[in-house]
Image (cartoon, rainbow, N blue to C red; front, side, top):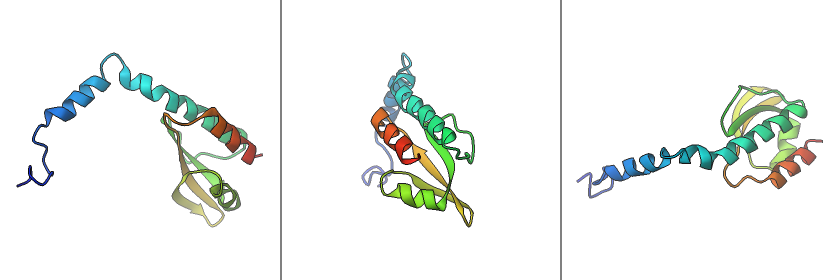
Length: 114
């Protein structure tokens, strides 16, 4: 019953094949390098603009504390997610980069923060 309704994969080895492929010849690290590089640039942009970080993240996700006025202004042009309320004037948000993040998008964010 579980197999017929998709709750249990009939061929669990198919998931294993994907992971085996990702961890062969550093493929996982090579395909994620761009996202991490863009996250490091994003981190620099946010830091240079004077925004504190909620926590230090070595991943493609950056958690920054924005004043609510800046957050509302950025919402119109930049994609990010609510993380938590810090106080009545500040909110922590999550920016995430990916394989498709471009230098141009980060340049635009940098301009918006000036």
